Length: 132
Image 1 (cartoon, rainbow, N blue to C red):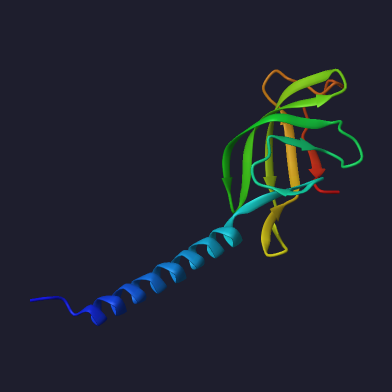
Image 2: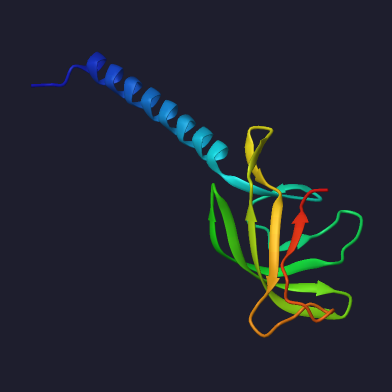
């Protein structure tokens, strides 16, 4: 028995419409559920460099290696650079908020890794407000 040509065309059209609709929903959901970081150039996904202030390049975090990244926040390790000083630090970013239909994190906390200290000799946490 030969397949019914109009029925095959109809099924192919329905399948194509379903794939297009599903693909659009998938991409839209991915864009709105992704989390970004505010920086001086706008918003970035998993940046490898973060600068504390848009008016200067120091201090900054460089060579960031992200250990976790999700809708609630992110954590990783980086080199803190400020003038001639460089130390290994742990970092956490949290407090995502909706900006132009995207979740953007602004609150960064950094602290020296074990056996590392800030130039003033302390080991306390620093808080940065990103994108300012």
